[in-house]
Amino acid sequence: MAIKDLNKKLNSLTSENKSKWEKKAKKRLANKSWLKHSRKIAIKINTHLKTNNIKQKELALLLDVSPQQISKIIKGRENLTLETISKIENVLNTQLLELNKTKKTEINLHKDLEYIKSTFKTNKYQISKSRVIKVDFTNNNGLEKRHYNE
Image (cartoon, rainbow, N blue to C red; front, side, top):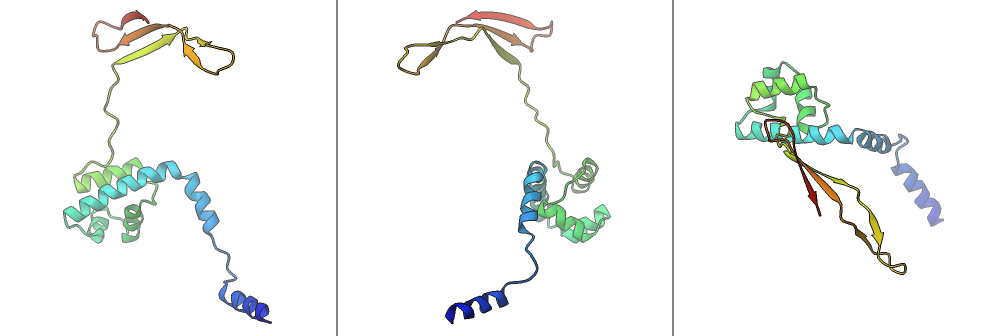
C-alpha cells in the first residue's frame, strides 16, 4: 500500500511536459566552438560596462537594438557577426577581438626519421640521427636554409 502511495505522489509531482535538457545539451555541444568565443567577448563587454558604469539599456540605445538582444550578448549565447562585434567595439571604444599576432620565424623540418627497436624483448624505441633543415623567414633576401646533422 505504501508503494502505491509513493507512485501517486511521484506522478503528481512530475510534469507531463517533457524536459528539453537533452535538446539544449546537444545544441551546446554542436555549437561549442563559437560559444567559447562568444563567452570571451561577453566577459570583455561585461567588464567594460562595469568599469565605466554603463548600463545594458544604455548600450542597447547606443547600438539601436533591444535590451533583450544585449542580454543575450552579455550572457554569451549569441552568435555575433563581425559587423555586430565591430559596432560594439566602436560604441564602447574597446577591442573585443584580437588576432594572433605572434609570427613564427623559424621552422625545423626533420627528414628521414627512423625508429630503431633496441631489443626484441623490450618495447623501447630510439630515434636515429636525422637531417634537420632549419628555415629562417626573417632574412629579407629570401629563405635562408641551414642544414644540421644530429
